[in-house]
Structure formats: structure tokens, C-alpha cells
Length: 183
Length: 273
Image (cartoon, rainbow over all chains, first blue to last red; front, side, top):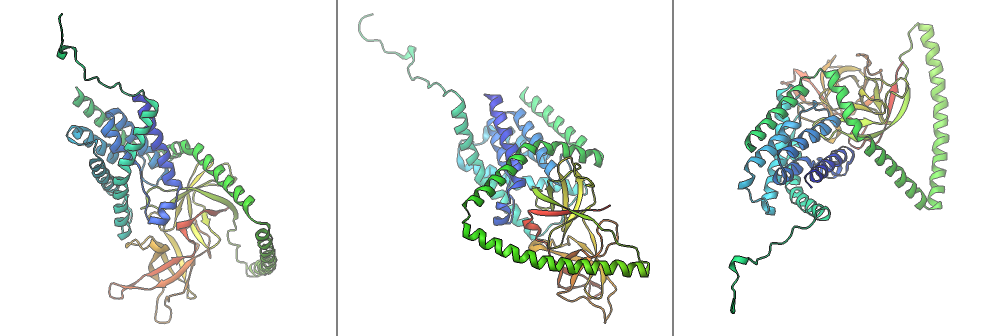
């Protein structure tokens, strides 16, 4: 199931990056493009290991950069750091709670463009910034917050469809059985 | 053990990123084209979905609407035919005058239709992908890209079946332009304030201003033709206002672009000899 889970994550990232480039609805309506990768990274780092986190960062980052004018590889590091930090601290996070997922998605959606911009400026490729960028940043963070719990729901359904249901633990324990009557 | 595995992965990812970022630009461009090639099945799927939707719409359109549209197109076609004849006569006269005055003919390019297949996912850049590649004869980098309304940008990299176009307003693209009837020259840039919202850009370094020769709102902006990429006299937009900067020491102009680059679907690539 682990491989299937990783493949599902990568397939979703692949389709999401393509839709980000080819769908103009959000751009035309909101004035900003939304991205699924930070939310997907939050989901991956909370449910999978370092391997899928690294794979998603590398593949998702490369796919995104290949469609963009960004230097190739610049999106990998911000994505990976989001996943790495959540992965290191995930035992302390209430990951089953939707509020926690939403807060992490919001933070990831806010950090990802900032990290990419930081790298771009350090590489000397700084784009033009204006007030519109602030609006795009807010929209990116909010959509990250909204999409993360939705991703948990989606993947939960997919996992239930592909996996055998977990065997329920019986509350019966032989050592606690009260034996009645004569032995 | 787990910690060690995490840190090894971190080091490997950082090394990969450093290696990718230090690739020579040509190699990075080729790698980008190769990786973006992975999206070809989805691009094909999107194109066929688009066609199927168009067919379904055509089937649903009423005969009355089609007849009305057909009549309007016939009228437009006749009007355009007259305009074409007038333009052909003017062109013929122009060629004769050039021969008489011994002025060389300007570069003439053939226009090739292209459909926009994807946009840059990052909103701080302005580029699109079009469905023309090196399979199209004459297709190469640094060719002008136009819409029916005016200049849109230039081709920056060419793959086999698709190319990337840098649009006006991208920080990497500057165009030499002439403004108004006085033909003052300047450079069209993305603008420091990010004025490209609302489809507007800045013209910086306006030269040739004097009390009798100034830029006014409403003046037309056209390409200058220097620099070797854009031929002269392609419409770019018109001046919206002329803010004074540095206490009037320098002049800039804000320009609204003729082509709506936010809703670009079809473009024309000018294949130059």
C-alpha cells in the first residue's frame, strides 16, 4: 500500500501542476493562481515517510519549474523544507484534527511562495513585486488552509477503496475472562 | 537510525538542487523542455476535450443563430476584402516609392497561428506555452508574437511541438518603442511598481522631449524596430498618463496594452526570414 499511496500522491501532484498551468478560471476570478503542492506536501509529511516527502518535493518542484520561468529546481527546496519540518515534528501535532490540518496548510501555503521568492532573489532572478503579489500570497495561504483537510478526506476515501479495512481489535482478552462454574 | 535517514535525504535533496541551479542556462532550458514534455499526454487530452466541447456546442447551436452569424461573417468578409485591396494598392505604391528613393524594404514576416496551451504557474512571471515547435518551418527563439490587437511578446525557447513565449510585462522583456505623432523613443518595461495589473506597463527613459514635443494621454505606442527582434510599427498600446518623476527631471508614461494578455487564447507568431 505504501507504494500505491506514494504513486497516488505523485499522480495528483502531476495533474495539479498541469491544471495550475492550463486552467485560467481561478486566475480570472480571484486574480491569483492557486497551487495544490504545499497542501499536498502537508498531507504527505503527516501520513508518509521521508521517501515520499523527498519524491514529492523533487518531482512536484521539477514539474512546476519546467512549466515556469523560474530556474529549474528552485521550487524543490521550499517544498522539501515544509515537508521535512512537519515530518520531524509530526508526533507533536494533532494531525487527525481538521483545525490542525487547516493551520498547517495555511502556514505551508504562506511559506512556499516566500521561500521560492527568497531563493529567486538570492539567485539574482528577482521578479517585480507589487500590491497584487500580497493579494496572491493571501489567496495562496488561504487555499492551502482550505485544501489540506479536503486532501485528507480525498485520500482517506481512496485508501478505503484500495485497502483492506483494518481488522477491528476485539475487546475480549483470555487472561481477563471470568470463569464461572466448576472447572 | 530514522534521524540519520532524514538527514541523509536532506543532504541529497540540497545537493540535487545545487546541481540543478548551477547547470548552464542552455542545458537547463533543454532539461526544462524535456521535463515539460511529460505533460504532453495531458496537453493532448485537454486539446481533444476542447475540440469535443466545441463540437458539442456547434451541435447545440440553433440553425437561426448560425444563419445570422453566417450573414454577419459574409458582410465582414466583404468589408475586409475591400480593405485588403486598398492595403495591397498602398503596399504596391509603397514598394514603388521605396525603389525610387532607394530605401530598403523592411523585414516582412509570415504569420503562423498558434494556440496557448499553458500559462506560467508562477504569477510573478508572464509567460505562456504555445502549440508550435521546431516542426514548424522557420520557428526559432526571438520571434515576435502578436494578437490581432497588437504585440504580445516573443518566443524564448522552442521544443519539438511547443514553445515558450515571454509576454510583455515580464521583467525579462524590454521593448524599444516610439510614442505618439512626435515619435519620441523609450523602453517599455514591466515597471517598478508592478503596473502590469490592469494590463498596463511603463515606458521609461523617454527621449526627445521638449516644450513642443511631448507625450500626451491617448498617444499611440508602436515598436521602434531597433534591437533586431521586433520589426518596426507593430501596435503596442496607448498612453494612459504621464507621471513626472524626480521633480520633472525624468519622464515616464503608463501604457495600456492593446492585446489583453490576461486572457490570451490564440496568438500569431511572426516567422521572420
